[in-house]
Length: 528
Image (tube, rainbow, N blue to C red; front, side, top):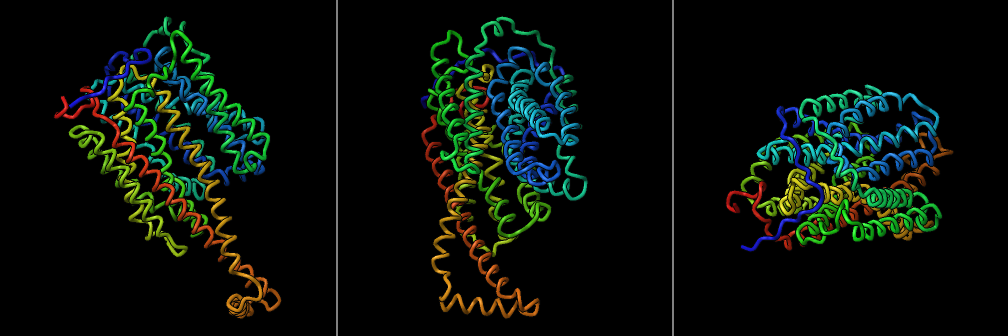
């Protein structure tokens, strides 16, 4: 069977093998989960954080945007920085700074100070995920790679589904400040694990001297501005806002400038040759589609339970904890076994198919659905989370030299982190528009003077009369309006599940065009 050529791009990322690999694995575990949990908890708890810090709606929106945009700005370049300056320098001291910022941020009330601290925190947080991925390739023996990448990959689904339970507990029992203060415990532990599990490496002065700082700034700034424009677009009415238009236009120009820069410089930091390879280009496209189809798990199911079923996070959290997190724990060794024994394309198809089936189940949604009705869907999403991203990472690595991972790490981070955040913004806009359309169409059939409407209002009025005859009519009208709004929201969520289903199908179609990877450390026995 014909195989594709391995893509060789970027500086050598292989470092000294760790003398204490277990500590390196702990560092990967803590770093990856820290970043994913922090982003998830913050997005879920934003309304409570905004209230606790006395922020206006506008301030809260920019507070959120600034924190995530700063992550996107730095994340694509971190793998190169860690290769040039060493993993220890990128993680150990920054982890302590991150802990200090996490302690003092909830104690501040001046918005300018809060915004500054959140940007600093976002920059540090954006460094953790790509650097912990590099810990695997720079310090761990090759036989540890697949198990470590499994831990790295499963963190996304784990944080998505455990976040509701944890936020509900912090807000209702421990205090909202612990959303930040937990990091003051985890981050130093990660720094200690990195110190013990990695070797002290000298600065690669030759690599630093030839640094493509312009390319890094262009891609990071461009993607951060595009994200900020999309994140604020739903709130500021898109191109009717000068701010949104400026952010999107300038961001697009900077990203285009990045590709021009990479084509012209002598030693490009993230050569476009990486994504011109068929298999890697398809894998990155599937990464983007994966982040969009996984919105059924991270956004749609929790959003419906909160906005339509009117459940609080501590009420809906056990569903995702029991039906998603627990299965992922049991599936972790299964995914490692499958990826070691069989072609990663098969497990990718399995994961994407599970998401497609979960999306189809979501299209059967009604306004009467409650926690138990979501169990089959969440179980399927758990299977999808366990297999899909892990397989995508393995496919990407198999078609490039993992010891030269800095170039594709930039694109992988942009596809995953940027795609996830942009997808959330676009899905919010999609749901809003669909809810408005559905509300308008339903409203055409709920008009004053209609016999059926009058009958319903009379029944509701008689029901509310014992509570006060003067307000009974207004309560009846409000209840009918709330019912229309509930059904309109339900229809919008159904359309959202259809959209995620089509994303999964599109990813499956692209997966069929991925060719076999060349023999390497991730190849199953039959391919070696």
